[in-house]
Image (tube, rainbow, N blue to C red; front, side):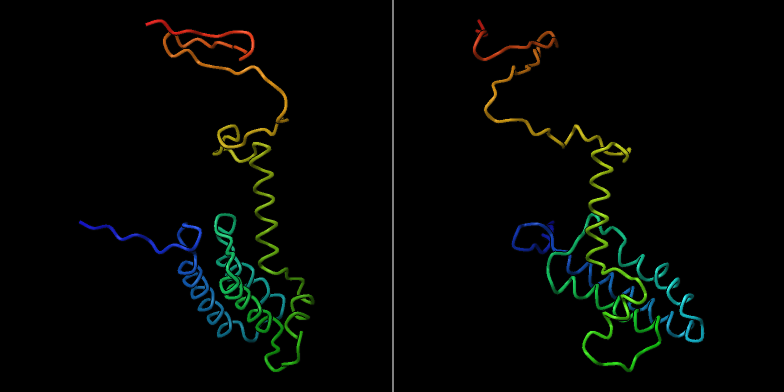
Length: 176
């Protein structure tokens, strides 16, 4: 049986465009639901509904999948910009910068900035050992100066002992 190979981007990793299309589709339909049902609610209620129902969908797993293609970033930001119009109830203003002003007025950061902050917070938690599922010693290698000669540790697989040797002072010869 032949297995299908996932479509990859130019780096060789599976692309996120299909996943982002599904995410934006779900967020868009949820925004439509909120528009239909929260039309008469106050602005604070609509903002809370956006944060809880729509932005949470857009940001779910954003530490793992941070889109780098501008078309994917624009898809995600388009939902937030549409939500800003929904929250303020202003669908008519079309002058340049109107939605950006709405986002500032509502105190909503761009999703790209929020993803960057989330990645930095997650990296800090990993380095400090706050994330319990990940052991930092398995993938974080401390940065050390390159021009110093340090003793190298070898594990003797025959007796499971640890031998510390310097490449200058000792030489092990294996006799067979």
